[in-house]
Each structure stands twice: as C-alpha cells, then as structure tokens.
Length: 563
Image (tube, rainbow, N blue to C red; front, side, top):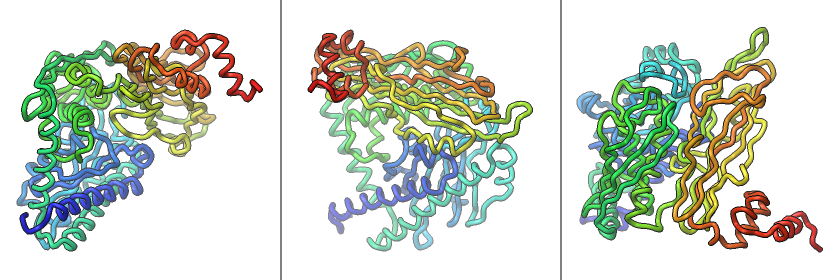
C-alpha cells in the first residue's frame, strides 16, 4: 500500500462507488417490476473476496443494502469456494440469509480478474409476485407466502439452469415479469464485473486486497472518531404501533461504548401470528442505518463504517423472528426500528434526531380480475406510496417522502400502465403534518379504483391507524391513517379485502409529527403554509394563534385581491 498515495486509493474508492451506481442504474433500466423501475426498491454493492462490502450504490434502500452486507458471506459458505467458477450467478430469496422476505431476490456473482477470484457483486430487487397468498400479511407461516429458493446457482459457467426457470414460472402469477427480473439482476452484476475489470486494468491492480483495507480501515476509523465524541451513556426508548390485530411495542436500550454502539431490543413484543414479523437481519439493517444517519452520515456505507453499530434481540421477538414465521410485510416493523432507536438516542444527544414520521411505507397491492359476466384482464399491481416524514430540529418534515426506506413514490401513469387500475385522486393532505416550531411533513389523499368491468382484492399494508407519529420537544402528532370505500364501508389497515366493481378505496395517508412548540413557529412560515394549502384556516387559528382577520387577509392576498 505504501507504493501508492492516499489520493490514488481515494480515487479508486470513488471509482468503485461509481461502478456500483452504474450497476444499480442498469437494474433500474432493465427490470420488469414497477417497484424497481419506478420506486427504486433495489440495492447494489461490490464486495472483496472475503465477502466484505466495499461500496454500495447511492440508488437503493438501506434495508436492502445493509441486510445484503451480511448476505454475501452466506453465499460463499453455501456455495463453497471450490464450486465458484467464472461465469457463475447465484441467487436466493431466503428471508433469513437474504433481505428479509420472499419477495426480495438477492443475486450474487463472483468477479474474476485474469482468472483469479477478486470479489463479488450483489444486488437485490423486490419482485411483484412470488406465488403463495400474494404480497400481504395474511399468511400464518412463511410456507404460505410464496416460492422459496435456497442459495443456489442461477447459472454455472454462463449456462442458466433452465429447470430452475421452469420451477419459478410454474409457481408465480406473473412468470414473464419474475423471470425477467431475475435476468435483469444477473445482467446488472455483469455490468459491475466489466466496469471493475476496466478499473483494475487502468490502475494495474491484481486484486482488491489493498484497496479494500484502505476503504475499510479509513471508514471504521472515521466512524469510531464520531462515536468517541459522544457521551458514554445508555438510554431506553420505545414506541407502539398498530400491529395486525393487536398493538406491537418496540423497546430498545441504546448503549454508547468506547468502540461501539449497541441497540438491545429485549422487551420487544413477541412474533405475531400474521406476516408482519421481521428477521433480525432486516431489523439490524435499519437499526444501524438510524445510528449512521444521526452520527456519521457523511461516511460512505461499507462493512467498515457499519461494524461499530451492533443490534441484539432475543429470538422470538418480532424483530428477531425465526423460521417459519410469516414475514411478508417485515418492512412494516423494520421501518419503525429507526424511530424506536431515535427515542433512545434523543435522550443521549438531544437536538439531533427528527420527530417520528409515517414510518413504514404506505403500500398496497391490487389483484384485479374481470367481474362476474364481464370481460377484462387479470393483473397484480403494486403501488408504493409515502406518508409525511417527521420534522427535524431545524427544518420542517418532508411531504409524502419515505423515511427510513428511501424509495420513491410511484407515478400514477406507471401504476395505471401496470394493469386496469385507476388512481382517481392523489394529492397532499392538509393539516396532516404535526404542529410545531417545525411542522411535520404532510401525508396524501388517494382514491383507488378499477377500470369498468373489473373487481379487485385490495391488499392493505398500512399502519398509524391507531398510533400516530409522536412529536418531539412539544411538537404535535401527525395525522392518522384512514381507509374505507366510497360507500362508507369500513376497511382494515392490513390484509386482503374485496372491492366490488364500481367501488373505490379512499385513503388518507399519515403525516409526520412536529418538533418544538407550535407557539415558537415563525409567523411567516405559518402564513406560507396557509397560502400553500398545507394548513387550513381553522388550523392557522386553532394551532398557531392567527386571528380570523389575519387569516382572511392572507388568503385574500393569495387570491390576488387586497389592492
């Protein structure tokens, strides 16, 4: 390593990040599932020959990539180094050795340079259908949730296993889409391999060992410096969410030690009877992500920067669900892990972390079919949507923006293109952001139906129906989730529910909570929110103390009146 300057190693590090970003973008361009193309529900990374993550793509989700950081070691162990050949591609959707549920396929490809194994590329994507009951929380065990593929070879020495392809096609509702996604995953790893080969040739590298040590040592040292600046304290945090039929409590004890931070989830609720359980690998991914965002956000994500963050949880808790627990909607619990961690961290370093937000994604899947006696088509349409994020100590929360998942909301056009679904309404939801010196982000209104001649099952994947986002430092709670049909029929926040032809589902997605007392909000920001429609006239008077005359004057000016 002494023969090269730190600047040279840094250039190579930056190049690796560029390589995996191109890898991820190749997946976005070639994937069949709208969840990948439009929402960015994917991850990509490069690893050294020992299976340690060196760089991750900027595009992607922390749940995927941080869980995938542990996955490559499983692949090496299961395949065996003696069975790793140039041209191989491996895959799995094992929830416990992949990224948490059967709908995520993780694909790993060995990278060779001049005939020598130098590393691995890995990627993950959410596919819309894996058979079974379909995407949702209704299953009582993982066996009901779809086809399961252990770590195995998708291709050996460049030859795809056609028997595997036939098995997959015979077990899913959307075979072309699923198989297309598998090929897209394999292809994006191939892009990474070619770009890595170019880089190694350019810099005269025979392997990645020295650059790996530079990346991992510097990342770990920088992270430890951030931890060393924190007080040596422990604190407890907790939060309660809806669960499926009964509320779920997430409890955590956060301990800042000299060379690590430990999140211990002892005291958390046990596994649920339905599929909202979370394998430890996925809960750990979001616990580490929460800490890294708050403590070392500017340090690139890799095995070195993640190592000092640790997560513990007793087996059988909902954040350490073991086989064969149903785990299809593991993201619902996993996405609340950061807010539980922040409840504790706020007591150690106050004034740093945001208020609670909507937390889990506000997803739904629509299973469409012709109504009895009608002509039409069958389709599975998955829609990713977001509530509001929590207010931050110095800034308002973001409207309709996912945190912690980071995936994008799907455009209406892409959703409607996927099948005979109609999104009749999609707009911001006034007054759903919690009040405070910094206002919580707004949720959304949505109205969902089907084209004429179709009925559908609506698979709800929502939370925050009974437990809104909580504010910090005197901030108010965010708006709760509301769901029902346009004829007044009530609907549950989770589970598959039938919607007859001609009916629509009305959704009010939750808002983020506020930060600080509402009385401390800048009056100019209140007037701005009123003009933009983020708050109603009633809220401006009730929550922020504006007079009726002032409200009327602001609205009149906004309409172009007032001389």
